[in-house]
Length: 354
Image 1 (tube, helix red, strand yellow):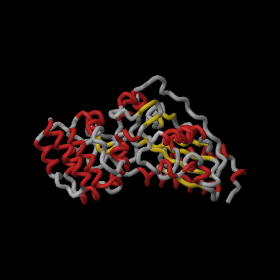
Image 2 (tube, rainbow, N blue to C red; image 1 turned 30 degrees about the horizontal axis):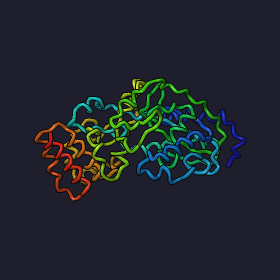
Image 3 (cartoon, one colour; image 1 turned 120 degrees about the vertical axis):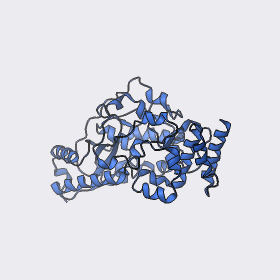
Image 4 (cartoon, rainbow, N blue to C red; image 1 turned 90 degrees about the horizontal axis):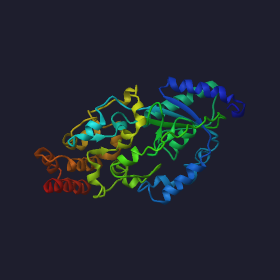
């Protein structure tokens, strides 16, 4: 293994950027491992209980904010950004049609985890080809890593008031990935915050989950409720979810910087199964086998058929009342899952009351 201290870090960083671009990444940055401010913010967020049932956010201690504790020997981090926005039916049009399922744009195609991890591994392999074996580990939303903090430190963008990374040239519709390394790579200069006095993301949130600039109470966030939460969704929040059945893009839709969002060139992120504007009732009719087969390789597959039906039942409960909508709900009234039955009965009660 080559002595890391003998490497020309500046020259190697320039080549890593070139290799990253060749592999389909839209930007590559470099950060050191000092995350003291982010660590304090995370501790306060956890203390407030804003993580809800996401116990993994607290279970790793300081490994999340101290890269060298997670991967011993880490001295610098290669960060990567890849656009994911697909060519799809406009989200605002889907949201306006209560009979359609609004699905977060990142989940319309194949699951990004394997693709990004594979590309990052190829980038690491290319580095090893150039300099010989070195210490590293690749990550894509797969371990206790402070992705936005590292991406911000490395100049890939700034942390917006909705807590997502923002860039002036591409908005926020992109995935992040990292390579922790023992290489002495020069850190990039962070970008300035360009949110200014804008409150668009705070004011548009259907459940008012962005409780203050740069602070999200996950317990109210529709992405958390429809993806992370395993049990019943609080009844008071169900009407506010509307037809959002997997994730929520409202804060991104409202953000002025997303006028510059770019459609992704990666074919794996293209829409599958017509999920960009599918009818709620059609998706609700899928059997567990259909769910498994059609959504194999999709991020949605990870929540399972039971929670998928739970989410769709809420969407149907919020939909304009019609015989077809009520019939769809009645078809699952006696579903074996108590979780599904609870949400179906809630939805039917909504239509009876309406």
